[in-house]
Length: 189
Image (cartoon, rainbow, N blue to C red; front, top):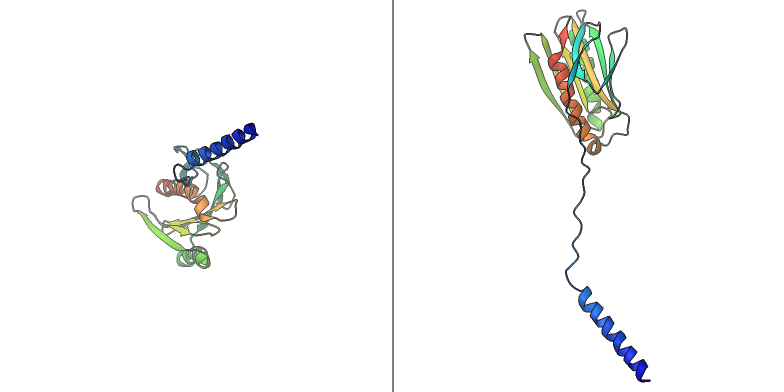
């Protein structure tokens, strides 16, 4: 009986000891973790496409062209493509520009905001706008450029995923730099 009592006392002391030592600091929740995406530093290559225009693109892209002056700039690693549309002007510049702008503003239903940044290079005769469409839309970046006389070039960025703006925003920002570089290096023939 003495052994059983000793065992009970040891068990009670062990339980009390565990309770005393386990009740120390309050639990601290872990901080939220965020995905860190790193993209390579870009360098560019000139694309002379045997078209009415030429420009520089990222060396991480693949460019496919069509006979009508249209092109696709593909980002295989990002699962994205910039679709380039070329239209010659035949006394219908305003009509073409309205059509291109209409495609941009069709996203108004789902877009949180549509921001535009104008671009002008008088020396190269390149005038245009870059549209940044915020929200879960099919194409978050679009641009149009013209020489105001003979050429209109427009482009739209598409990802091969269901639109989730927060998730693809880093890739959008990365490709936006490439689109700005494309427009800045654009030359008409």
